[in-house]
Image (tube, rainbow, N blue to C red; front, side):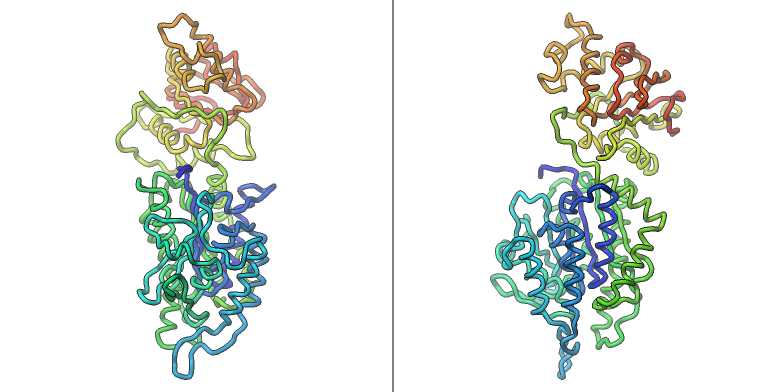
Amino acid sequence: MPNPDVRLLALDGGGVRGLSALMILEQLMDAVNPDAPPKPCDYFDMIGGTSTGGVADGLAIMLGRLKMSIDECIHAYLQLSDRIFQKKRHRATVKGKIQGRFDSDELERAVKEVIKGQGLQEDALLKDTPDASCKVFVCATSKETSETVCLTSYKSPRGNNDLLNSVKIWEACRATSAASSFFDPIAIGRYNEEFVDGATGANNPVVELWNQAQLMWGPAPLEGKVQCLVSIGTGIPSLKPFRDDLLHIGETLVAIATETEQTAERFRRDKAYLDSSNRYFRFNVVRGLEDIGLEQSTMRKEIAAATRRYVASQDVFKQMQACAGNLASREYVGEYRTNFSLEGIPRVKTFVERPSEMAELERALLPQRQNMRQKIFVLYGLGGIGKTQLALEFTRRHHRKFSSVFWLDGSSEVSLKLSIARCAGRIPASQISDASRTYSISSARNIDEVVGEVIGWLAQPDNTEWLVVFDNVDRDYSAHTASGSAIPATSTSTQRYPTVHGTNLTTSYVPLPYQAEL
């Protein structure tokens, strides 16, 4: 896959409470870009969803396959819930057989209208084009095997081609929404397999999302490729069954209702590395939705109020800002991109995680869409406590977000000049002279001229997204511009070429401006 920085979105089921998930996602996209909130399909590489009630089922498909904005989704959601949750019959027949209380045909008609409203044929396949940037799946449960099946918009190495080439968008919505006692099961595909609600096996589809992403971005472990995984719930419900439950069905619905947070906690523990490195985010309204049934579409005011209260809390606000910052820092693609290399830089075999320090580095240094100002950060502390290794891990983890990463030895003027000159060979041809790109110690070219060209290249007005690491600097900085540009004073050549942008990360054992003690 072309993009190694994978962004994943999991959407819990929850019937009408899916409005809460949409409101949370709306707030997140607004935090990414307040001036022009983007569509989720432009930021997430894969979206997985499920449902227990027929409305939230469509969120993953509407956001990813139909590429709808959140405003469009909320509008469609409100219309769908009003139409769909009109009780048609009782939960059980006179013979005691469970049946859908709501009109499955009306759900089908409503979903088809949404599909046509996005310019597609009502019978369009869930299958998308091979080059689609956002992959989508929804969970359904096979009535024959009781196993969770992922209906996908993409070809998976372990997927079922007969379902991929035959399942329509509206059929996928029906299959994942066929909750026991809500909507009738549906038979789809070449073999008319019957499917029921995906939430019966995966009301929180985060594990299915992880497994699907591993298939698509494998075979190497996915942990090293995921930049951000966002999981959004539809409220923590109460532990009591519906009042009119029948034998066994009530117990099943209770299990479904409580499974989401249990799954979230198991996943958080299993993927503790993602959580500690600020790459896993779980959002779920804690209080206010527990007494709202999956089908109570008239309680949208209560859903909206509880969700607004949740996102306004300080802890959630901070978490959302961190998540938005992660999402906003996409991989750099542009003319100034250079090959990444840490050749010759000593690296320990096992890096000891420093979650709080790494999170501080990420907040301070990762590129932001709305902020092109220069960023400066100094790691300060005694020798041997891990400053270089922390800087090295940050660089290794995030180098794709920068146009270039130059690692410089700042221990002396000579070593600094030499390491800058070595970077010249990685700069794209025609952007500096061939004489500087092919410089070697034995060449006749003056090293100060090479250093000057490299610094001049960094200072070009549209070359703003580079990262320069000054390792082992033991002298003070000399600021040169009003914007806070600073380059180590160990090199008189660099002083002649101050820059007003880019990112500087320095390790030092002496106090320097902009320092963070380690």
